[in-house]
Each structure stands twice: as C-alpha cells, then as structure tokens.
Amino acid sequence: MPDNNLASTKRLSLKNLDKNNLMLCTVSIVIFLVVAIANPRVFLGKVNLTSMGAQLAEFGFFSVAMMVSFLSGGIDISIVGIANLTGVTVGFLFVALGTAGYTGPIAPFLLLAFLIALALGAIMGYINGFLISKFHISPMLVTLGTLNLFMGIAVILTEAKTLTGFPIAVADFGNAAIGIFSVPLILFVITALVVGLILNRTKFGKELRFYGTNNKATAYSGINSRAVVIKSYMLSAMVSSVAGALMVMRVNSARANFGSSYMFTSILCVILGGISPMGGKGKLSGVIWSLVALQLLSSGLNMLGVSNVLKDFIWGGLLLAVMTMNFFAEQRTAKRAKGC
Image 1: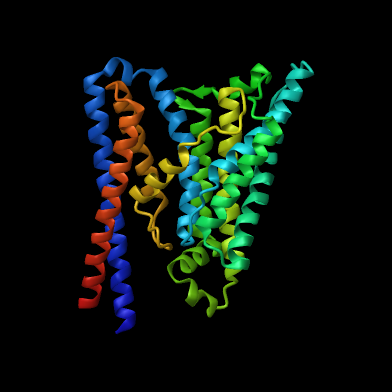
Image 2: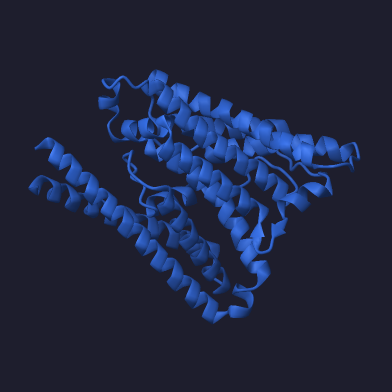
C-alpha cells in the first residue's frame, strides 16, 4: 500500500508540473500577443528583442542557480554576492589589459575570465556547502552570511569604486548578437542545457533530488549527503559566477553592487516555475517558461511606463499569490494521495 501511495503521489506531482508549464506557456503567449499588438513597431524590433534576450539571460543564470539550491531543500541567498565578487575579479584582469593598451585578440582573455569565474564559483560554493553540511547550519543563515562576506570583499578590493578602462573588445563580445540572439542568451541556453543534463542524466542529479525530497532517508541509503550538499552549492555558485563575468562584459565595467535585485527575482522565477521550496521536486523547463513569462511581463510594463516601485509591488504580489496557490495545490495532492 505505501508503494502505491508513493507512485500515485509521483504521478500527481508530475501532472501538476505539466499543468504549471502549460499555464506559463499560455501566459507567455497572451502577454506576447497583447504587447505586440499594442506596440508592434518597438516590441517586435530587432533591438528590443535582442535586449530582451540579454536581460532574460542575466536573471536566467541566477534563477537556474537558485533552482539547484531549492532542489536540495535549501536556498542560496549569496548568488548575487558570488556574481559580484567574480565580476570584480574578472574586472581587474580587463583593467590590466586596458591599462597596458592591449589591442590583440581578446578571445584568450575571455576564455581565461570564464575559467577564473568557474574556479571562484567552485571555491565560494564549496564554502557554502561545507558550512551547511558540516555544521548543519540553516542554508538561509549561511548564505546570508556569505553574501555579506563576498560583497564586503568586493567592496574592499574596489575601494567602493567602479572599475573601468576595459578594452573595447570586451564590450563588443558582451553585447554581440547572432541575428536577434545575444551572446549572453546563447551562453545561458548552453548553461541551462548542461545543468539540465547534470540534474537529469547523472548520479549526482538523482541523489540531489532524493536528498531534497527526504534528507533523513538519504542518510540511511548509502548516499554521501555531505558531498551532495557541497556539490549542489558548488554548481549553484558556478552558474552565478558565469553570470557575474557576463554582466561585467556587457556593461564594460565592474562594481561591488551589480544586480542587487536579481536575488528576489530569481526566487520569484523559481517558485513560479514549479520548483518546490521544500526540495526535490521541479523541472528546469518550468523555470525556463517562468523566465520567458516574467521577461515578457517586465518588457510590457516598461512599455506601459510602469514605475519600478509599482513593478516591485507587482512582483511581490505575484510571488505571494503563486506561493498561496502552490500551498493549496499541495494540500489537494496530499489528500488525493491519502484517498488512494
């Protein structure tokens, strides 16, 4: 009987997730049509579509990073701090090139910048995962602490100033596009595919979902829970660090407080995408559809002249509404499972 209940619960959860994706897809199409009809000349222009793709990529990286921590049953509040410290570090590399008057091929240094970003992300993610798994401290408290730690280091390194003087080729790369697809968007798609493969096709991905669903049972299953937690926060941080490097390349400067609003937006996107805050459940496809819907909504609000203050109010209300709906949906699912 318990096995039947478990199978029934799993089927219901997958069904709900599919419905969630369908809802997000429908919302995205409706928003797209409304805004396109209201202002087709601007909205459907190449410049706007390319800009939307770049913006989607930026908070997309943070959303995917947050999703990974959610799947473990935790949360990573430090993602923006990780991105900023990475961006500042990469920024010093580009400042050195600009100061030296370097005009040669930029590709080797861009590759070096991404390698530095991944290495820093792995280190900072390891710190988060180690503290959480070793000392059993709440992920929220640990990552809140490291957020301030990483941001503080970035402020000290920059002396609270903006780093400028990068080679022009850096901005050329960060703002390049193939057709209407910006380079940040292309790199985000590649990153999302890699993360999706890791979560769905590897032993670690299966262990991560199992741990997020029931971390106590994981302790008796032979799975190295500490390694799972550390790897999950390393993956989250590495995705965030790539975002930090890309933001620096796009704006051709670096400072310690870039993208401060992305943490809240990423939480909204992940929850809207059907990722359970309790861990273990959710699909990357839901997060992608959520990204599309929120980006279209954001662009639509901008074209309507909605102020940033009112936009924050709308995001907050949307987050509360989605969390409330998810709560009642989970309650109905649990009742149906017991009835079987």
